Image (cartoon, rainbow, N blue to C red; front, side):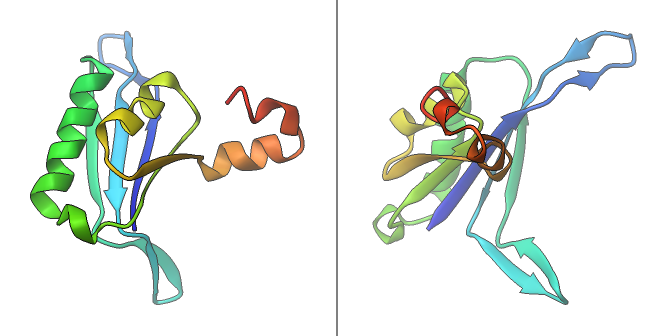
Length: 117
């Protein structure tokens, strides 16, 4: 299995303006070391500006360069349901979208929102 987690966050710049980089990290799951969970073989990437298509092409190229596709059974793309995140399904073979842990927990009390997300 391969996991891709994607999100965006506002960052204040030194000139007082704000930017919203898109953050993506790819990993092979979690493992426990010294009583703490750590991501296995994690790769972090931040994107400022640019189109979602360019982000996902870059992610697909990273996966292609570092993994053998025939050995990957499934790729989970986790996020908040934003359109740019779900676009990854078009670029990453064997992928499936899942809500990230934060949004899954947030919607657990309000199941009617799950379909919209």
